[in-house]
Image (cartoon, rainbow, N blue to C red; front, side, top):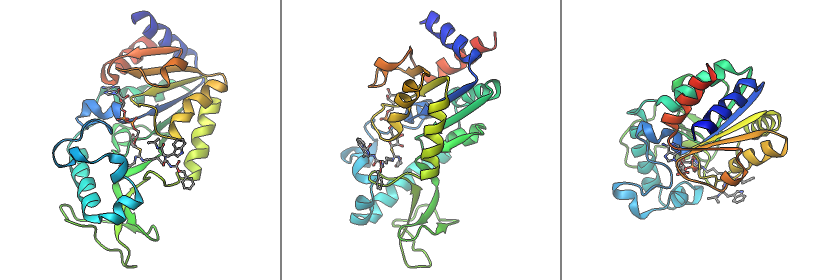
Length: 244
Ligand code: BV8
C-alpha cells in the first residue's frame, strides 16, 4: 500500500491536469452518514432513492421536506475534514484542477476548493418546484414545504433521481475527465449515473485512475492505483508525498 501511495503521488506530481470525483464517503469523517448507509432513526424504513425523487416529494411533501430539514441541520453542524482540505492542497499544486462532487453538503466549498462542480446541487439552497424560482431565507423546522409567491411548493435545490443534471455542469465534467492526466475517485460506490461514468471516460482518454475507498467498487478493477482506506487519512498522506 505504501508503494502504491508513493507511486500515485509521483503521478500527481508530474500531472498537468487532474480531475477528481467525490461521493458521500469523503464526508463520512465529518460525521455525515453516507447515502446508502442505514439511515438513523425515523428514516431506517425508507430508501433514499424513494425520497430523493420528484414523485416522492409530490406523494408526501411533508415527509421529504422534513428528511431534508434533518439533513440540512446535520450538515450545518459539521465541518470539512482533512480529506476535503487535502483536495484544496492538490488544487494549489497541480496546474489544472477540477473537482466534481456528487455531494450536496457544501463541505468542499467550505474547505476552500475553487474549481468545483456541485453536480447534484446544494442542500442549503432552495427553489420552487414548478418554476425553479430561487427561495431565500427558508425557515428551519417547518413541518412541510413553504410556498413560493407563484403558489408552487418550495423544494431543496438538489438534483433528484430521474431529474436531468445541469447541462453546463455535465459538459464541464466530461471535458475535465477527457483532458485529465490523472483522475482521482474518492468515496463513491460508483452506482449513480451519469457521475459514475466520468472515471471511465477519463480512462478511455488515457488518464491514470486512482481510487480511494475502504471498499472495492465497480470502478476498482479499472483503477491503476486502489488506495484502500479512509480518505481523511489517505488524501493528506498523498499530499505529503507530493510535497517531497
Ligand atoms: C439522470 C442529490 C436523466 C439528492 C443525488 C444510466 C444507467 C443507470 C441508471 C441511470 C442512468 N441514467 C439515469 C439513471 C437513473 C439514476 C441512477 O443513476 N440511479 C442509480 C440508483 C442506478 N440517475 C439519475 O436519475 C440522474 N439523472 O441521469 O437524468 C435525465 C435526462 C434528461 C431528462 C430527465 C432525466 C440523477 C442522479 C442524481 C441523484 N441525486 N443526490 C440527495 O442527495 O438527496 S445522488 C446521491 O447518491 C448523492 O448525491 C450521493 O452522493 C450519490 C451517490 O452515492 P455515493 O456518493 O457514492 O454514496 P454511497 O453511500 O453510495 O457510497 C459511499 C462510498 O463511500 C462507499 O463506496 C463507501 O465504501 C465509501 N466510504 C465510506 N467511508 C469512507 C468512504 N470512502 C472514503 N473514505 C471514507 N472514510
